Length: 213
Image (cartoon, rainbow, N blue to C red; front, side, top):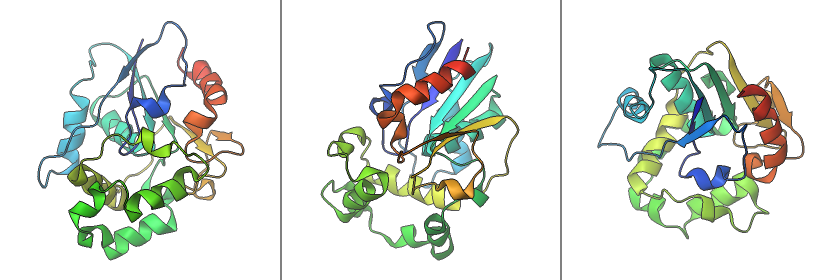
């Protein structure tokens, strides 16, 4: 069975490289595409879904912003099973910080070059909210196109979505990107931050092996 995976915002498959799956699972990572100028989210989701062969059963797995994407793809190309890691099932589960970004439309007013400077306040902020103890954090954020980053953060802030059935949610108890208090996850990874697919890979892999069979 093919398992299509979308990683977190700005990250490629490296952040998920420690996850392991049952031997019969064929893992296919879907790379982030750079959005077209002023591209609608629905159009972007469609383009991201084009590499998925839905002529046969398949699974979906998304991490963080990738979790949002796979749920949108689920409406176009339904998977046999869908799992989200460190992500939310609907806009009601957003953090207060993300909701504030939506209300104020703050991202719109941040200059695009701000998102392209790896030494900027943005990356210091990302390090703080993801896992300040991980010295190698920025190694996992390899998609650094400024327009992509700004566009994606805006889409997260403005995302509107109702829960769809059978989405399996795995969250960390110390995640401040998507706080566990706003959700009712199916599985909780203890003593872990938003980077739990990397830092708690063995535990997460054990769970995923019971789901993707």
